[in-house]
Length: 153
Image (cartoon, helix red, strand yellow):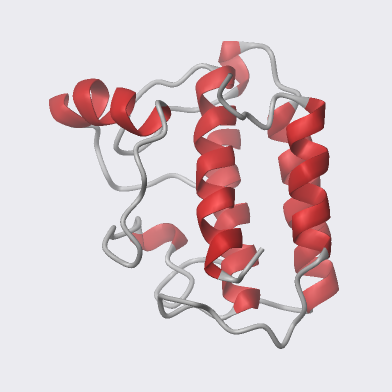
């Protein structure tokens, strides 16, 4: 079965991995530091919650083929996918504040988005279009896993 933050077991796994991060860790790839990564991951969940709106509009290929390939677990290329400018940690996303606070904020959003059941409580994705809470949970797990591996976790 695919991992998904809608599973309490998967959330607990993510919390352990996030708790293992330290403010001095360096990325194995990419340009973000660990604090920027925490905020970037939180910003993705803020999109799901409707707190951040993206200028991007879903395209047919994103709503269909790419959406299903990504949700099925197609590996994300390291450092090759451009993120929305609204959540780009270095160009418009939420800037890091204090490491422990940013870590706890990410965990709070994982818990919040991971327990949503009502489709009306999640917003469309800027590339994939409408997603169910379960699809958002899967996408969030994949995104978090990708960035935690980026920092060795």
